[in-house]
Amino acid sequence: MISKADIKRVRSLGSKKQRELSGLFVVEGEKMVAEALASGFDVEDVYRIEDIGEEAMGRISQLNSPSPALAVVRIPAPPSESEIDALIASRPLCLALDSVRDPGNLGTIVRIADWFGIDAVFASRDTVELYNPKTVQATMGAIFRRKVIYCDLPSVAGRFQKAGMPVYGTFLDGRDIYSEVLQPEGLIVMGSESNGIGADMAAKVTSRLFIPPYPRNAVGSESLNVAIATAVTCALFRK
Image (cartoon, rainbow, N blue to C red; front, top):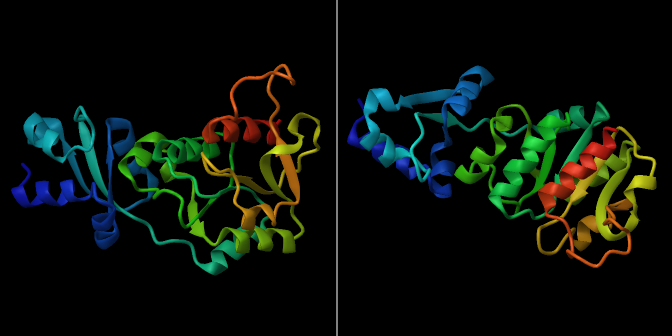
């Protein structure tokens, strides 16, 4: 069974403020709950529809249709500066998200990073919150396998440069990504859905890239969705 107090507590985790105060977030769905339990994250509670009933599950669910299982999971501590230093010293290939605001896009990008073995995702502090329910669901479990590190992006980009690694960025005036030699290490910056990469981060980019349309002189969509552009870019880096 589930008490009224627990229903209130779980429901409150739909609020960013309550997630920050409690240090907890919610995952829903049999697959997501199974991944949470297998991940090493601290799972505080698991509720199943056969145990608490459809009506109670509907009250605690953040989804339009309540799923068969829901878990309350503790938000892990962010990596320390020494852990970030060790990550950069390993000469990784990482993503950097500059002001990505849509929760579905962020979740999809984390899933893309997981698929292509991207070592970590750095995010500007004004990027949408990772533990937003829509973001969590969009990761399809990748949230338990890929680190998302909120930070001062220009500073992190500078640390990659200091370590002798390139900082790539996607721009409409960049060089054709299909003809560029792409290194297996460095930082790939993706900009916001509406404004692209901001001036502070653009100044840190050492290689400006562009995904051309087909045919190359086509007049059509103004740009690609940031998650789709990330998928294309990661695929080409891993080619």
